[in-house]
Image (cartoon, rainbow, N blue to C red; front, side):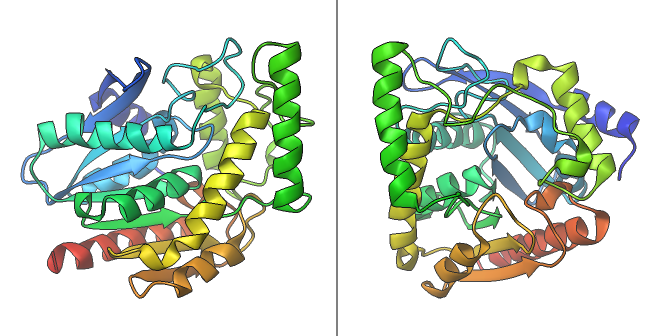
Length: 313
């Protein structure tokens, strides 16, 4: 892992700003520009994440000659929250995530650079990015998705939990006049490394938790019932659209993932000639903050995919 001081110095070089989305919500973002860059990489992150968490990945990609554009999804990270409770993960409509990505690309990225655009996504960001590139294939040369959220691993069937989440959301709105946590959910709690299901790297896990301790504004807990119902519906629609993928698409699955369903990622890839699936053995969900062997494999696959797509663009 890169030394913390070096990563801190790199983060200080980022241009950190906000833009106003279609509904007035403030979306936080960061950019890194360099002379003679080969292309732009736009990053759509996962649930609970902030761009601060991507410091090492941004550092690696910058060293490979890319301009970098990363934003925090609405309602999380350094972006404006959607409820009075800053720890609840919430969105009114899943398509709002796609609108934010479109505005970020057209207002910020294209305004700063005319280079080809590549899309890198993780988890929930993959569910957003894949849906976006199906809808707007002309906007990106290629997409790479790390452990994309095509199906959430749940303790019961999707249909049952979606119905329950909808019912609980109605109760929340009637009795609390605002969204409530999913059953058993709560605010941000930093889980001990030995019990985490994100990464097997103690150093990268500690770095992630340190960021969230230093910048409590980015802390986020469980999602709302409304978010869960909308997320399940979005994933179901997205899986049915796999054959619509029309740009070079790399899907990375984590062998030991307990957050999203790896089999659904494999199945999705089989329905489009433009998709390539690669499993990272011995990895938990967070491929970009895993131990060095797994993380290096993921980074190498992503950059090779992008280089090949640029060569044929």
